[in-house]
Amino acid sequence: MSSALTDLFPHPIVQAPMAGGPSGPQLAAAVSDTGGLGFLAAGYKTADGMYQEIKQLRGLTGRPFGVNVFVPQPEHPESGAVDLYIQQLSGEAAWYETELGDPDSGRDDGYDAKLAVLLDNPVPVVSFHFGVPTREVVDSLHRAGTFTLVTATTAEEALAVQQAGADAVIAQGVEAGGHQGTHRDLPENDGAGIGVLSLVAQIREAVNIPVVAAGGIMRGSQIAAVLAAGASAAQLGTAFLATPESGAHALHKQALTDPVFPRTELTRAFSGRPARGLVNRFMREHGPYAPVAYPEIHHLTSPLRRAAAKAGDPQGMALWAGQGHRMARELPAGQLVEVLAAELDAAAALLGRSASGGDVR
Figure 1 (cartoon, one colour):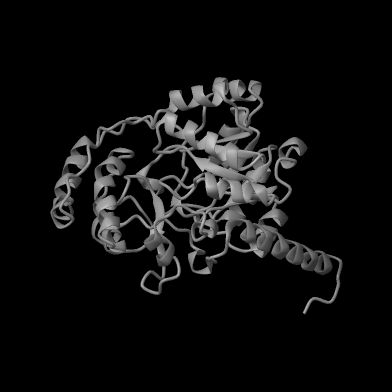
Figure 2 (cartoon, rainbow, N blue to C red):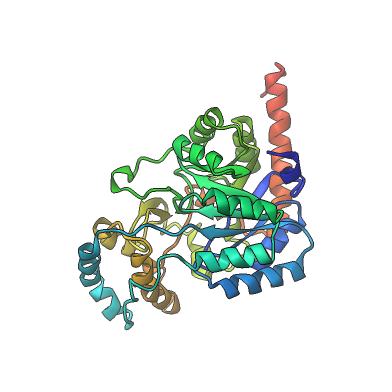
């Protein structure tokens, strides 16, 4: 990673921007203040809502931070499939005594308005998910003094990120919780994701920009492993989900280590796009029938998810989590960064002794 960007956060620890509530100003400030790079998630917020959170975060910390933006999605031709899924979910609406959402509530997530705010009020780092911004957008952010990162799930996608002029690529392995940041959502690619260690190695051979590794990382030893594979930093989401500063629902936090939810799967059930979450009733019953239709299905199921949370029913909630969820620790976010950094130092020392032929027991 370029020295200028590395200097922004002393520890190679990036807090993933988790949209929908978890990644707010309190969490980002705690991470940045302790030497990591905290992130706000602008996804599903209005441009003004994003701006207000940026103002709040700046009042909490003087350290650098990032803001994540969703790239607008192309139109999907499966309008009939969406109508069928509406029928599929009618029983859920009756059960939770709520109306289904409007699938046509908007496709671009206020992208242009958010970019305008970020250019008028520059932040240190902006990352992009679900696709690659244009070269013009990247150049304009660079002129504003902002570093840019873009998610990729394959080496081919990483090449597109490099060609757009981004400063670094986030290599998102299939282990990652929440939405996969694939640039083109194709049903034939379902289940074809690459593990983070293999992905980092492939991307390092394909591009010459720095790599940030993401996917199931919960311990400092795992950070050491992705650094050894060629990454310059690690991005952790689920590890920060259980912290008190996280805005995740209490039921979501509890479910991470609840034996009732022993595993995760990728599903389209809640949003129409592949996302990894804890397997629950909603996912089992509706995942096989969910169409390729993001953000239509996200809008459609939003009232159901809110109603399930209000009813205290985690079986109807989107419990996003990475494959390492059972390793979640209920530590304050700043303390978690310090623990991860200490674990990383210990693992790096062990790797160093092993590489030099020392006695490793």
